Image (cartoon, rainbow, N blue to C red):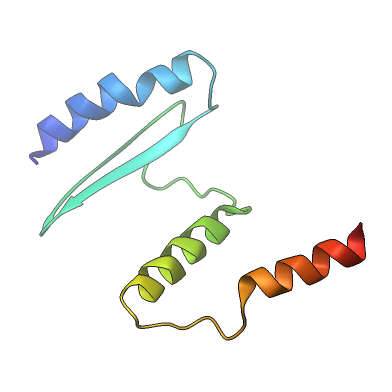
Length: 91
C-alpha cells in the first residue's frame, strides 16, 4: 500500500470517527513490508502519547488464543471448572 493510498483510506474511514465525535482523536499507522504510512486526526499524530488503559487485555487475549490454536500454549487449568467455582461462590 502506497503512502498516498493509505492517507486516502485513512481520511475516508477514520476521519469521520473524529468529525462525528465518536472519538476525540486518533493516530494510525499502516506497515507493509518495509513501507510505513502514519497520520492522525483530531490533533493526534504519530508522536502522540496515549494512555494504554485496558487495551493491552485485548492484545494479550488475542495472542494467547492464537498461541493455543497453534498448540504453542496450553492453559494450565480448566477454564470452565474455574468459572463454575467462582460463579457458585459469588451467587
